[in-house]
Every structure is written in structure tokens, then in C-alpha cells.
Image: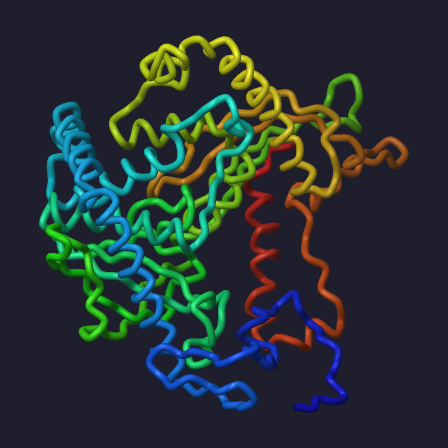
Length: 439
């Protein structure tokens, strides 16, 4: 293969690299290349991949799920203890929340319960209490999915499917070349169809990650089969189908801010800013990851699973050795709370490209569980946004919008949709004039 005079990549500000740039992908190794569903490629021979690879890789992902399912079933006796614990948790939850006793809410509860047990219940002195965001690799996702689907199939007699997807941040389905190109979801077929992602702790019930919305998915139904004297969850690779995943629109994904500004009585060039932010849909995960700490998200996850106790109370109930570490745990929690202020100071600097003179107050109003928005407020002092001109003062109103993307002349030619996208910034300025109160 010879490639010459390759032009310099331009316009990356608009690009999804796997979808918009020319790419040559190679798989090479010493010895034969084994391909599941196709013959091996002998050493020294070169073959070109075809569109058949999409189905091969999707089938390989299903094969991985089955392999993990078999191992998990054999080592846990078909997740007997996990299924019993989830059933008990559901029964305790509906005793305290009788209105939640609806078959259509079972999958959402089991998902919340599993998120709590996977990420927040098993904490130690070595836990990073500054961090509230955890994402996991494919292997962990497989076992999270298998455990969830075993509970739904065996305890609650609910149909579930495995969805294998090439997301919009990956290669087009016709260009799939590796299992690493794919993502996985679960579809639960209750009274209403629901979708669940197991890639991190900020994927909430019935939420499709934004990069997978509107993408093509291969659907494999789960069933149960007997093996080794136990029931085993199994992906039926022969009964697959194709679907397009639902997608949300701009009404479900937005960020709004209300800003109130007051001048300082003693110095009119100093501004006191009060800012209230609400982030909804696909935009909120980055904000949640940057502005929350372990303690806050653990409380949120615990409440959703029916375990509302704070970490100190929960620690006391665990064991004698855990109780002996209570003072050290309290110290770690206090350090994380102190560091929390730095998160909000950094958010202001990221948003405005300048540090605030002082962050006076910050508070998370809503942690953003499920479909609810992530909301927070700040009060801070800013300098340099007011200039004196004789007896007058000029306020740089544009600073309150936050920093804007700088578009170079050649970048304007890179994307035809530019004129449709850019007015959003203009509308933000226009709306801000109505929201801002200057006193």
C-alpha cells in the first residue's frame, strides 16, 4: 500500500474523526488471523475486509456476552445471591414507597439498585472521595449487564434484549472492523420499552448515551437455557434484528443560565455576580462529573435504591473494623468537601477564561437523577469587566455569556451547516439581555 501527498487535516473543530476523515485500518499479526464466522487468513496472505465484518463483529460481541454469562453463572450459581438481594431490596423499597409498586418501574429500580451496589455501597478509606464519576471497560460492562438481565429474567419474568451499536463517535456500521468499535445496551420490554447503558455511574435509567442516539443497533434476544445443572442467561445469535435507536431533540438537551449582576458600592469596577445554572439531557453528564463529589452521588444513588443513610451511618452498620475507622473516614469526607470549592472555582475559570476574584458561595440545587436537570448556583466577584471612561463606566456585557469558540476564516468553509449552528450564540446574547439585571 502506498499513500502519497496526503493533505493536512483541517477543520477538526467540526469533525467526528471516524466518520469524516479518510482512514485506512489494518489488522496484521505473525501467524494466521482467525476470524469467527470466516476462514482464517494464512500468514503472508492479504485480504480486504468487506461489509460482512459488521455482522461478524456484532456476533463476536454476542459470543463474548455468552462466554461471560457462562462463567458468571457457574461461579455464582446463576447469580442466586444477587437475585435474592435485588428482590428483597425491591420489596423493602415498595413498602416505603407504595406508589412505586408498579411493574413498569421494576427495571428502573433494579438498575438504580445495581448502580448503588456497583459504585457507591462498597467504599473504604482508599476510596477517592473527591471523585464522583466512574466509567468501566467492556469486561465490567458485560458482567453488569449479565447480572441485571439475570435478575430481570429470573426474578421478574421480564423480556430483555442485548443491543450492539456502532455509535456516532465510532465508525459507521459498514466500516466496523473490530469489537472495540462497538458499544452495548440493554432493552427491557416491559409495559413501556426502556433502554439501559452500563458504561458509567452517570447513565440513568431509560437513558441512551448521546453518542448512540439515532444509531443503528443489532438486537439479540436473551433467553434462559439449562447447563451444568443451573439456568443460564444466553444470547440467541440466530434470532437477531436491526433497529434504529430513538434520539432526543434540542428540547430535551439544553443549558440555561440566569445571571444577576450588582456593582460594588465601594468600587464600581468590581461586580458581584449571582449565577443559577440548569443543565438537562445529554449536556449534564460533563457538569455532574466536574462538580460533584463521591459523598453527594452516593447519597443520591442510595436514596434511589431505598438506602438513604449518609456514609457515616452506613459505615457504622458495616462491621466493627469499619466503625474503628470512623474518625479517618470523617477526615477524608471533610477534605473532599473543602476541595469541592475548587471544583466550582475551576468551573468559573473554564466558563469565562478568567479566575473569579473570590467565590463567595456555591450550592448544588439538584443532582440531576433520572430525567431531572442538574442545577447549581454560585455567587462570585469579578474584576476587569468594567472600564471607566471619564465620568462613565462601560460594562462588557459579552463577558457574561462565557467564552465563545473562535472560528477562523478557513474553518467557515469547512462545514455547510455553519450558518445554522452559529446563530445559537447570537440567541444566547439576546436572551441574556432579558435575564440580566444590572443594579
